[in-house]
Image (cartoon, rainbow, N blue to C red; front, side, top):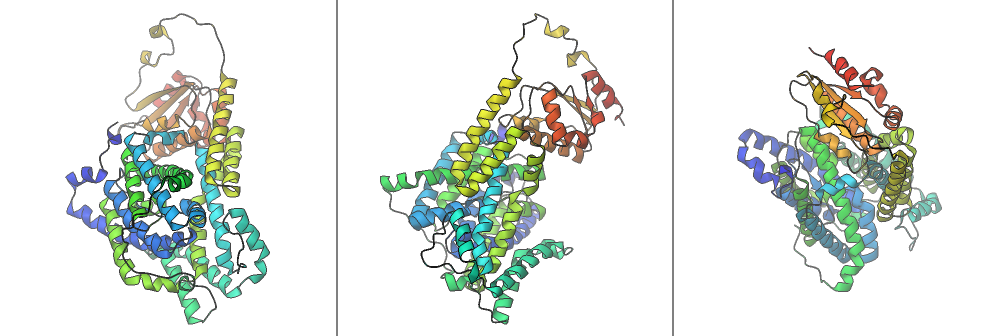
Length: 552
């Protein structure tokens, strides 16, 4: 496909670039940089490194991924998904080990793009994505309880694994600092309330206001609360090139971590691209995006940063503020260079409970609890098993085990479902052209488009729904499903996305001949109610008659 070619999107969009769009990209880049500043610092601290490493990542990786990327609007930098992984690597292998793992991951990502593996993202079931994302959110919350409550851990207390952190919080709860808790609660209240303020709440990020409020409380009231400066040495120096010492044993030690970083970066960045595509009605180049992610992570590692990937929230902010080309992402990185030089020393004043509050909101925004709850309530039992297994393993163990076990379980349950739907029937010889149900024998009005789906719809092929196109004159879309024996949660999620796309364009969707298992799944998911039971027809002739009533 054209959009899968290995050509940076920047080189394509510049052909028709205008002064008006440049002005919008610059404004959006500045706004996104303001949003990225406190987030980059907070995510770096959650990752067990210093605050400047987060800024370095946003500067170097953010610029390179925008320059070489396969998306028009992707904004890259440190993200919450990597926090617990990076913290574990730093605790185990130090910054040198993290640098090697990130370099290795970057090379893996580049190779994935070159060998055109970008399409493999479709084989990650929606249930696994929701499960590990919610699990990561929980681990972030658990990791920030200590700073939010101002707890003091005894020297030597194991607090690397999530369960160890939870145990340490319980054992040391008596050391709670009331002043730290007050700062954390006020910061959290600001983060929740600020976006509700009309106009101004959308233009100025709440995290920045929370930082000012936290600093004002601690300094103005003389509170005994830990700040970044009390725990870390702050530097406003520009990132410098550092090439690590390579050895076979060092590379083998970080190989598993590198693969974890690469797979997670690929999943998160391509998911962010898909979300962005739906917002701007565009198509990203998945393989070029993987190459760019690899280049960005190599650059980040060489200049003192941590792993980076596409950030959905920052990408969405870029789109909402008018950014439509990679120039916006590059401007965001340049602005952060100026912030690093001028304002970084003041980061020492930021209270740790404020950082914890910011990360609580990051965890809440990324957890997708509504999707999680909807799946638990409405998805087939096999998908719920995969979802809960992935979630629990992410929290109790790590992401590698969670995704590995989740994928194996999803495949086993898929094979079981397929076996249950398989039947053996005698073959009746007939001329396909004489098939009485052949759509070609029917007159389809111009305002109606008919698509026939054949075969089981599961996580490996669910993206096919995205290939359905709508014309300007289309008023009705008929989905014929007589050849679909089974649907899973990923396919249902894609169908709901298709329904929402149709609704946005004023197109009525009608289903024809939905078989027993798919119908049960769609009813449980609430889609029958959403679309309207009257728009589920038993036969294609009934669907065409129904479609005729929508002709304007």
